[in-house]
Length: 204
Image 1 (cartoon, rainbow, N blue to C red):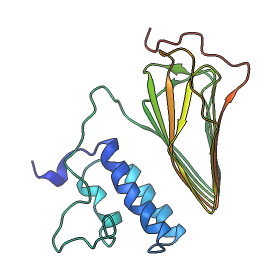
Image 2 (image 1 turned 135 degrees about the vertical axis):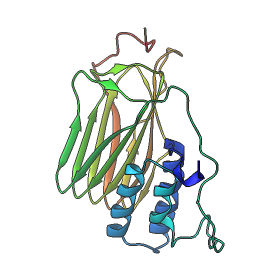
Image 3 (image 1 turned 90 degrees about the horizontal axis):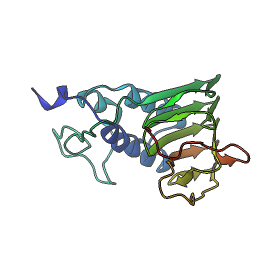
Image 4 (image 1 turned 45 degrees about the horizontal axis):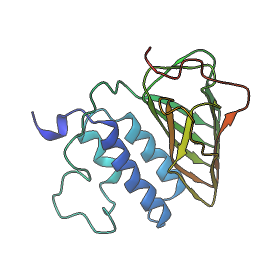
């Protein structure tokens, strides 16, 4: 099978999204162009579909060689990762709350809109959860139980990326990592006092 026809992994999408984030920060594309392209990236199902959004952009600050195919390495397949969940709010709102099963990865995208992710009553079926939050002139608000670990690797560009990091006392507690960026918008994540996950060993 040609490489372009291979299924894309979440890691492949994240690498491509990082190229778009760098291009936005360097002024190579506008916020509107970024919004359009990032949507295509997270809808992509194959490696070939990840190429068009970044075809005219450099990789790591260097121009892509003539005829170069993809901006990412060989596909990465994560056993048991399952499909990612996507929450998109464009001039509107999207939310996930109540009793729901959390995917290993959730992509949240807000463009002049608001996304709310409430994990306080959710079912955790794996220990490590990644929420990739992108906010452009919008907001992404994340709430977690107070007895899970909350970490952040996000960035604010003329916006706020505020995550109240906390390490759970129990080493078996789920870990929620919030990554992504905010441009003229905001990403907020914090534990909710009084809301606790009863079973700290996911999948049991």
